[in-house]
Image (cartoon, rainbow, N blue to C red; front, top):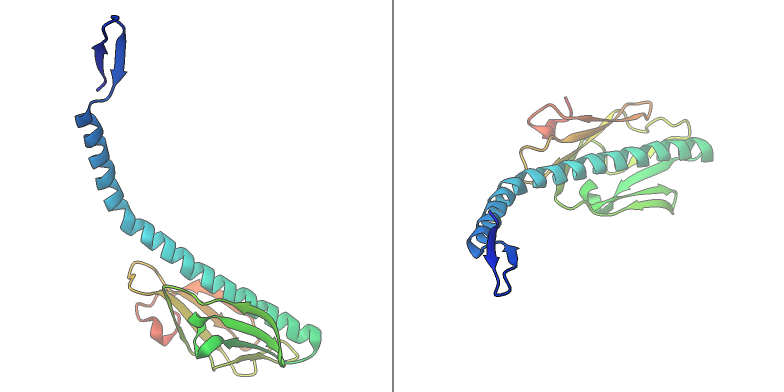
Length: 167
């Protein structure tokens, strides 16, 4: 509601009252309070999806490099945990590094190092790495599954207990 005031010269002056402005600010605060939890889940879902996609891209590159270079290529989690980041290495040469993943957890059936042989296949059979959000039950985990041929696929984990692999 806009109130009109007349000045000494007789012209109208338009504006909002203090009460109207306070009401609008209060309503905006309520709407923001309701929206914040949803935005948090959206951000965490994007982080989980991004982490799984980045690892898949690294694994695809590792397989390609193993075939191209005719040499074994390793993907190694930094500090022994996938959420601490990972490296793509050929021998002692590091080709690619990925940074630590904040607010995420990862479980794995993979050994400490994923090795691609010169034919692009995995040195050790099928492997799975599951990325999930810490303290966010509404965010579905993403699985990066490797078959014995070395092909990496990302999908949503439909199992409520992601510690036992992807379903």
